[in-house]
Image 1 (cartoon, each protein chain N blue to C red):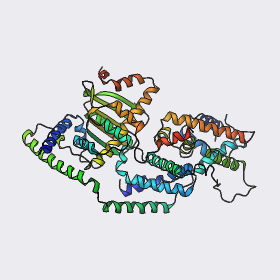
Image 2 (image 1 turned 90 degrees about the horizontal axis):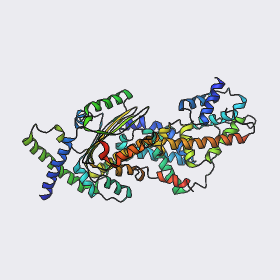
Image 3 (image 1 turned 135 degrees about the vertical axis):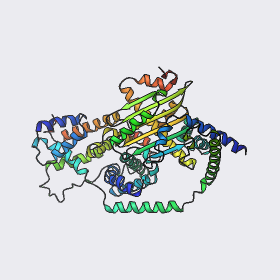
Image 4 (image 1 turned 90 degrees about the vertical axis):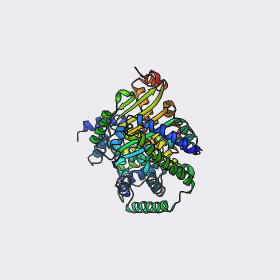
Length: 176
Length: 172
Length: 172
């Protein structure tokens, strides 16, 4: 019963966290559209990660980086043309209350537009928004909770994805 | 991703994937094997595809990693330093072989001896025509690094070409 | 084709400033058969590139891959997800609680909260959710890295770094 009560509390808190998430509006607009890829990972789920066994060093690092993350949402669409992609990108910016965010980084080149927006409170980043489009895809991600950007940006070096485990190998082979 | 999407988006990349694997492994059967393995892996990971925006680059990466894995496990690094080279034009008699044919064969053996990274970049850029950015995504390098390595590779190839024959290369 | 242009393109090629399109132009020219004698070496190189792009895999390969996918699918259906049964149970319980709490909330705070309260996890098991999270974070890290590299190039690195290190300074 205790467990249930704690769960209830967590749920209430996490729901509140999402209610504050200003981008929900944009997400909910495409919620029922099956052409989009939706991903939602709530704080409940993040809580369960603690039960996973982190055998690999990279998993340990990741778990550390997400220890205080409360929610992750992704909205993505691929196989679209460039116009639609950039249209979605613009539309997202219309709906996102950009005044409430600070721009962390903006990358623009021939084919891609990408922006990182953050919201911070008392020196801690509480929300990270990553939004981008390319020639045939659109991608929006929001992260809520206490976010340690430094820890996250360190991941790219230490972490590999399935099938990519041997990226380091070639370099070491060449230094011989 | 449905099986239809797989057929239309992943399968057509097979030739590129095969040539890349072949460049790394220098063995046709092994290369074919690796490409099949990579495709199955891509299929099994299809749910994760959308965050990797370029499907082809993803597939190339998988092929590369599997190939390197294979190379490591078999250690046929040493046993296959050189590759047999077949001219695609069938039955060329010795008299008909031109200087160009000889050059092509020479280049083949020369590229096979380039450092791994340069060899991969030559394959991806000069043969397959990928952009620097795509190559960076496949090899997990930044575009500048790709360019530096490509420059070295081309320079080495050029010097080799000039060496083959005294009356050299028309490049300026 | 204009030889002057070919020479220019070659020059750009050796310096790694040519575009993919320009390199295609070179391949097309040297494979056209009308190559001046003094350009034989370069012709050998670009014919080699074009020739190497001809290797590929046949229909049989497609069939083999698709057959294996069918196998995988069949295997996936029969697989009982035994190790994760516990998590499934936990997830199911949580789902019930969520529903209950949502009903509760809606009854008492109807109209006050936005509909996003109905947010549900996409994944039912922590393993799947974790895999997705991992991917997402890798992507973020990769992009942050790209951004940093670009910033470095135009010399605003220190500014961007400060922002990452000291988010307090962000508000201007």
